[in-house]
Image (tube, rainbow, N blue to C red; front, side):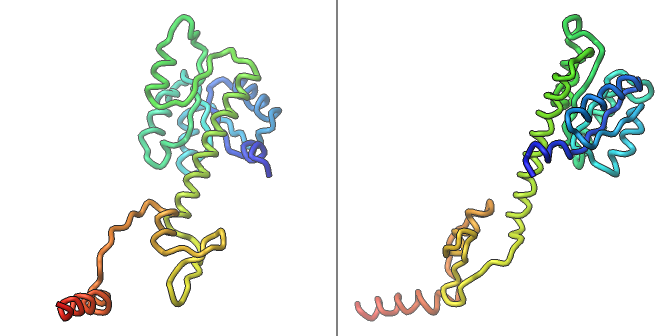
Length: 209
């Protein structure tokens, strides 16, 4: 499956109190190949779902009765388990006349902003750009988890204790771990090795004097 195909399977939530606008957004996105677009006529209903089913992208109309887009954005960004969700704010306010919605949206943590009326191409490109960044973030997070926990069987030599890497060559344990995690090593000598390796050398030096 190509990366573009994976993007189109990501989950998008759209909230707007105007059902005509909702249908328009969904139509544009579905025609562009996005398969999972869920619509909400209120921010409150959207939040109820976000708590249980985390989407890959939120599109929020700013001016919604009861629970505005700003309030939804604030709630999302306040929750450590949800703050990563990219949010695109949508408003009918003209940016040429008033920069405040744009400024406030970005200050609160939105990643993008669309002013109505928008073209189908603009909506599609902004959504695709947001999903591309979120997909990359998810891939990096998954790779980080895998590396941190070393989720695999590590072949280790019974004699020299070297590890066979993914590229099928042998590495010292400390080299392998340093390359696959953030761990750094400081070297010391354990008591057993001191008595087996170091002390005999010291004793020999003393005798040679």
